[in-house]
Length: 231
Ligand code: ADE
Image (cartoon, rainbow, N blue to C red; front, side):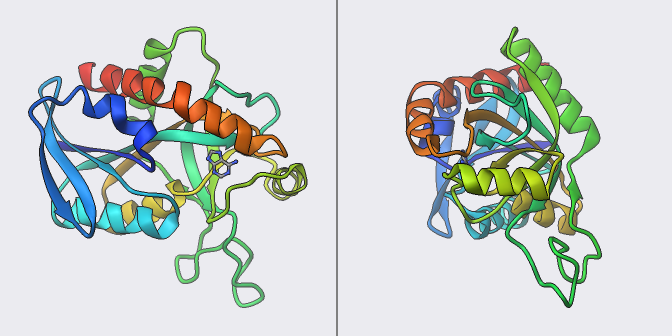
């Protein structure tokens, strides 16, 4: 059983890599894949880079070249749902691409020829991840539900409010999860994702994001991944 641990940015994964002393590096498609072990598990850790295409490429390589059995994404997101605040943790039950719109040929948000807009994460792995997050970060608010992805850093209150109106059950917004969910759906590979809320996707998002990514993101990711693999 090989587990992939994926983050978009170095700041989100640095502390996880520090836990893998025996890793060796393999470069594929311009990305460094760190192959090693964590708490006795075979692990491949990688930085996807930012955005849906980068995430889809990374997921495909993990599955085709590294034959991973499950993919866990860890990183940060902008909070959308009421009460989803900076510092809270969100475990995704499903993903949707908020910037996908092939209407009027297909309904808005629907992925053409899949007949659906929402891609569920693996229920069992997501529950394990949520349990791990609760153990790793006691006292931190934990939310589960829809996370939306798009190739936009949402950094105005106007856009955030529009997203909240259009997708009222969306808890958080980021830029990779829905792409990985679709690739994992195609291959039948288990996927789960955990995101710490770095900002509220509003007019202050870029400032809050930079501060959070430098100070908290890596620590949170490592604590959650450790708790997951130690279980
Ligand atoms: N990741 C973290 N914050 C985000 C935001 N506001 N928009 C998109 N992705 C994010």
